[in-house]
Image (cartoon, rainbow, N blue to C red):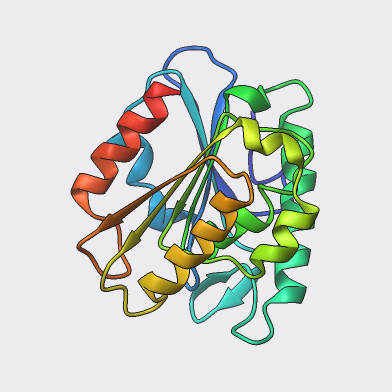
Length: 209
């Protein structure tokens, strides 16, 4: 069972209520931590799901960050992606099944869901990106693991997001969709946060996979 001692990032591990090899990896946004998403597993309340909530590797004003502010994101994205690859390689070696598992990210975590998740060698059951953006859509389409096209992607965004503009993220998702990604894009009347109706939809989406 994962713990802080086993993994290169501090984390919260919440085991499933029934034995299972299903895992949801949860990536928070800038300045937050794994504790900021501790509400999510009990809200989703999926008995057979294990949850791993990770702290990003860089300190940021009392919380953590996955990468630096624009225009200096790339180094952190690459470094965080490498750490995530090591963690998932370890977890999916024996303990959990990649094809039954999910990657969930909010804001910065949503960017990593795309930038890391689409390049990672193993294909997961689903990828959920909430209120994020993509660093370089064309580069992602070139470097992606082509097999992720066979998986399911869910991307949500607030129509009046004051941190990451809705129109920018929507256009980026459309570029990926045109490039072959199976992405379901849903907009919500919200700012840079997670809405109740959105959480209900996300739970239903996960259960349907």
